[in-house]
Length: 100
Ligand SMILES: [Zn+2]
Ligand SMILES: [Zn+2]
Image (cartoon, rainbow, N blue to C red; front, side, top):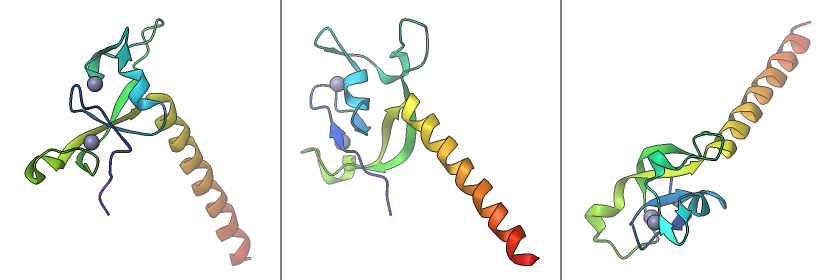
């Protein structure tokens, strides 16, 4: 299944996933390019989730809704990655136990 955007910006036609991602590209009621959305501590705020996403939220012509870049919060991405690694670690343990 294709990754889809959950927030769509009609002002700059960018696609976002997750609760926070959309807000992160807005500053002073203006859109930032996701690449340059940076926090006060110079942390990258948004990371590209996929370049091959599907937009179901805009009025764009169908040809422009496919293979779109979708952005997400860098913090959320890191958290998901860590969760994924924990899952893998747990599965590894379970496997070892069952072989005994
Ligand atoms: Zn925007
Ligand atoms: Zn979109």
